[in-house]
Image (cartoon, rainbow, N blue to C red; front, side, top):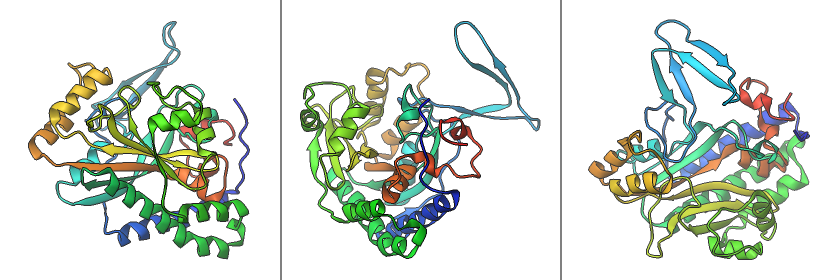
Length: 341
């Protein structure tokens, strides 16, 4: 693995985390969002996601055996009473909360299995947190406005705060906070994004890591990519009149790339099932239907997004790696990523 040098001390990591969390919560309160408690385990499968499991023992510690076979590098056999999915995001859960509250958010713990090469990306972790936001709307414009107000509000709260902390007052931090405060975040379609990195605009695959970085270096402030074609995204979204999906990424400038993904939710339960099975390849017989059934019976239309918290810390602080924000009290799988001692 490639060594990733950390920029901050453990004390600075805690300081950055504290002041950014405070700024996020103050801003969301100002925007009249209700903070909800995230669910830790779920019986619901998130379409397209690579889930991990948590096993609940029957008053005894579960028996875990690591087995090696010729076909699979590592297999785990666990004996326990019940098994639940660990969250990859809180996509469905926050939608359910809008049955009772119009605008919600939470700081959600997430578990994501790293794919090939992601450990060296400087932006991926095995376990991480997301600022999960959801509101009753079917308008991307409304969502774009909320997300921009969130970042501008966080930046404005941090500008003077970071300056007052000698340890945190870096040139990159001030530059990045000022970029967030500029507002008027540009918007480009996925086809336009491909053109800007000299790729085929009709391509049906997502930006590569290198393209993501190259594109973000062309901007001096955060910007949006939207109108993604079928087959590019690994979740379910509303299909628009062009036959594409009303899904979007919020990108950071200066080579930092994607910080947030979201979208307008499908308007019917049948659309959720059709996309899950037809586009994402979920086995129809094993697909959990709770999400689709909730949509079918409640008929609540929402849109939202999730902001990677460690990625936000990385950008605001001027760090080059999310490994700066693996804190000393975290003894989980992030410790196995190169550069974390």
